Amino acid sequence: MKTTVKYLWPAVFGLILPAAAGATSVADLERQVRASDQARVQMQQQLDMMNQDLNSLIGRLEETNNAMADLQKNQQELFKQISDLTARMNQLQSGAKVPASTSANTAKEEVKPKPVQTAPAAPDEKNEYQKAVTLVMQDKNYNGAIQAFNAFIKKYPNSSLVGNSNFWLGDSYYKTNRLTEAKQCFLNVVKDENSVKRPEALYKLGLISVTENNTDYARKFFQLVVRDYAGTTTARLAENELKKLK
Image (cartoon, rainbow, N blue to C red):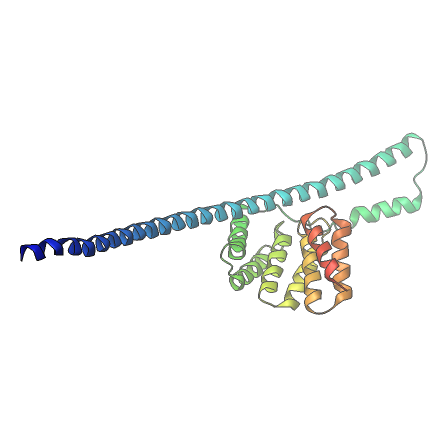
């Protein structure tokens, strides 16, 4: 009997050791899985924070671009007034009479109503605008963005952010396949040659024309982007689309 027990121990240990080793491997694997899950969660949190920072930077960039566009318009108007005034002063100094037709035209220009100027965005406007942009850029809630931008444009028709609002409204319509509404919004943006969103609006109109199988219009829109905004990212995208057209 002792001899039998003596030879059984190695067999018993042979069964126990692999089982223990297997248990250790499973535990290690579980720890690795948990560590991997934690790493993924941390990475996702970092990505979310980076997206929030990016959206904030985009909003600030748009505000800066709007301010620069307003400044450019004011500069152009001021230079024109200075030029007109200088010409009139030179005429007076030289003793020359101002032609009657010129005087009449000048009078007409003085009483002619000036076009409505967009007012700088107030803090409340900026907050509402940024919330609407977040619905597009971060939440991907395009139907909510459509409601928000329509409400913003109606509430602040003279805001300097109306142009950009029209673009994002058009983009939201485009994303929800409401192409007729999208075209109208993008055309509203294109009418303003100083709009920072004009090249993107032209590009979107080209894409809509492609979707509608209107190759001639698509080519014209893409060519406008390449011609007027050469060297920009939007122009390079338009060039790629032109290559696809037959």
